[in-house]
Amino acid sequence: MQFQGKASLPSPVQKKAISRHWPIVCWLLLVLLWGQALLHARNQSTLIVDEAVHVWQVTRFMQGHLRSVTQDLTNIPGYHLLVAGLMRLTGSHSLAGMRTINSCFGLLCGVFFLLARRMQHQEHQGRALAQFLFFPLLYPYIFLVYTDILSVALTLAALTATLRSRHILAALALVAAMMVRQNNVVWAAFLAAYALYPILSEAHWKPAQVMPDLWKAIWPYLAVMFLFLGYWSWNGTIAFESAQAKIHPDASFHLGNPFFLLFLSGIFLPLQLIGGLRRFLMMAHADLRWLMLPLVTFTCYALGFKVNSPLNFIGTSYFLHNDLLALVIQEKWAWWLFGLMATIAACGLAGTRFISSQGFLLYPAACFYLAASTLIEARYTLVPLSLWLALRKQEGDAKECITLAIWIIIAQYFALGVIALRFMP
Image (cartoon, rainbow, N blue to C red; front, side, top):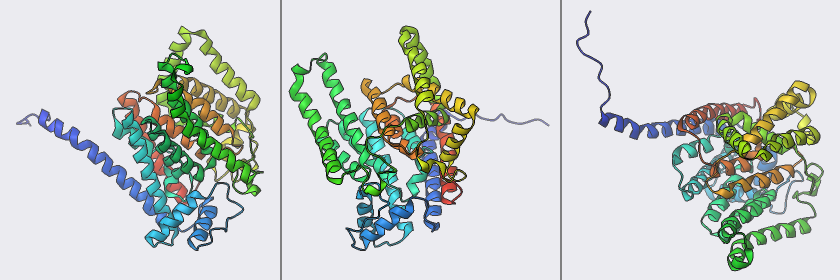
């Protein structure tokens, strides 16, 4: 049998049409996945873990009991007041309505993330946005009545304002973020340093020459910090309800969460860390002092990594992070694997290419932010990792596209698994 013709290759015009329509097809698929997760969340009537606290508090506020606050509430109830107000505005009274409102906060996260990337004039904005919205640790909480998503949105709003040199707006966004999760005060120090760095750099690190500019940039962030100190003094504890101070003690620092973030980076950012490790080796070749980083990191892990909170020892068959932590402290091979992966991740993150030179300031701020919590939780890493995703330069197209594809699959699996009550990440 003879074929009468040859298969024709797409013409340049057809290739251009395919390249133009392909992103639209991809975004339609992502919207369908998002809608599927939201539909499952709306149809699931069981409260999931901390939703019991948050839904009760929102409901009390909706009923007009503004002074009725549960003893289980750790955070200032700004999230609950906002959700209660939106629920009354929309006329909804259901758990499905609350979860839908939280999913809108997820979209708000995406808006501020995209604005932050645009302010830094980055390419592949759509891909970066899709990666952020489907980051596996963030995605499941978009469909639950939890404070974390609004906390991320407001912190990204503050970052966007700082990038625009709108420091008063950044401070207002940070105050709102503190009303949701009060430990967001740490990002006031980070954004203040981020704003001051270019001013001091241009003045060749002679602050006396640019004091008016320095003061104009820093005073709104100082006001946020003093406001937090005023709250702490008035309330007596950082935790909103003093009954929670035993679980979340004041001024108590632990290495559990910083090393957990490093480990999670090794799990979810392997392709990005490969590029970072290559640059780290180049840095170490140019300056041998960089070789102290893996040594210091693993030494700190060996001497300081502990699981101190009793909440990390419950529900190990349901809470994936508790199951992992139990394995690390019980099995020697798991302890070594966890520490080595965290150490490698630290070196890879050190080689991150940030859009602006002061991006490295995120690391000490993130370490302080995470170390202030004794309870080790994957969701505590959401704000630091969101800021990292917003401030970094992307790696090669192949690495980033593969990452996006893998994240979409894992994110949907996590979200549907959480909603079906099978596990919590």
